[in-house]
Image (cartoon, rainbow, N blue to C red; front, side, top):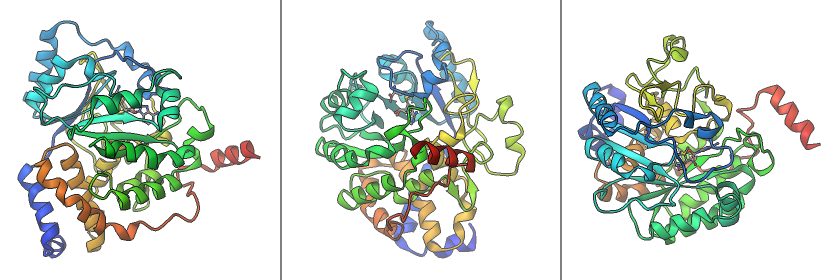
Length: 383
Ligand SMILES: C[S@@+](CC[C@H](N)C(=O)[O-])C[C@H]1O[C@@H](n2cnc3c(N)ncnc32)[C@H](O)[C@@H]1O
């Protein structure tokens, strides 16, 4: 252990967080879409925008079983399970649950039963308050958020995965209130407007005000919000110690995909085990969000967590910076229930308290992700 880390760990709170992570051990992670099918079509969903449903999930159960065995043999111990809609494939979800640490991301329409999935971390997606969410995810008719609330009432396995949009900041408080009153936890994600709908969905407006509101929610519900001010700031600005978010810096890239080979030689850190499997379980893709996804509109929270986590060395300059890093790592392990959730969640208010110095309101929406040309477009469009 470096002498700086040793010095920072003289603080008993930080030492406890560090110790819990150390005992759990390192993660060797992969991502899998367990089905190509989904029961809704969300506006601008990357999965359908990239035609990832063309890779059909195998019908033969033995193909799925062989996939599980291959991943175990490869040493994978953690999986992000997405799709398509994973709740449509409960038998396969159960097999992953029985063999790996995992998180499952679901739209919440079909309840994942408690029995057999008692300690499953469930990230239930929501994209805004009822009207906005119905428009964006329910084809203007189905109140997907209401169904999720009903299905997961008082279900402590659930942390809502709230995809926020720049023009709907005013909805954040109400959505968070409802999730908390429902007995659940809350995390955040940021919408990438890949279908170029514009207006309130346009990520090019920046997420500064969104971050301010997330910070306000942290002050209100410090025991319920599982995303830190630090992670929100890194996702929103796309900036980590002067490095700009993009393919050249992203750390969660499929290691044996041809499109990543140059990047993996550039000296920046990356997850050396990571692979993303398409629903056919045979083909792999460049990254979580597709083969050709423009990184300028990727605000994928899990990928940004990894970006921070794998850049430990940059966070050693001061105790505050190390705290920013360690709490990111801890919240990742906690949200994914790799460490004891009931015990660990009691640390969350103190984690937020330790990051309170980051919660200064933004002065102006920082257009750090905008290229100059894009900025000119945006300005001329709004004139
Ligand atoms: C493709 S979905 C699959 C899992 C599940 N069907 C669901 O809706 O949660 C995985 C996650 O990606 C998010 N997502 C999809 N398109 C997005 C976009 N353009 N910007 C930000 N998040 C997006 C969804 O909200 C969801 O949380």
